[in-house]
Length: 127
Image 1 (cartoon, rainbow, N blue to C red):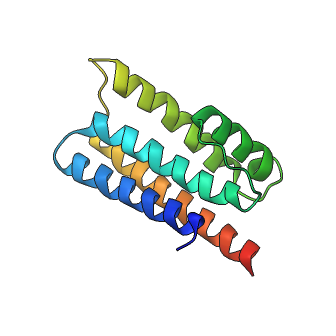
Image 2 (tube, helix red, strand yellow):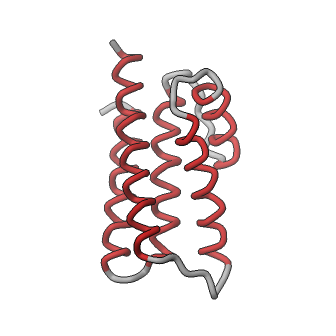
């Protein structure tokens, strides 16, 4: 199994964990799982450009410069990863943070779109 496949599998696992947490009403913890799932997706795509950073801020910056600014990936998906990072930080550090179920569902749907688009771009690059 390639490193790209390993990262995509890890992303899928994070999204599955988020779903479990959402179903148990642990929305705040689910936000972090979604964020890390997005990071794994971004890292997988960055490997196609031989970028191997594991630092979240560096991943986001490299993802933006390599794929968002070059219009390879939709701009909204770049915003998704940044916005989810901010929410995850709030969720992890604020005892009063809450996330309504409808917003969690939207976040999960957007995460799935993100992963699908990353997989599509990887498939195109690997052809």
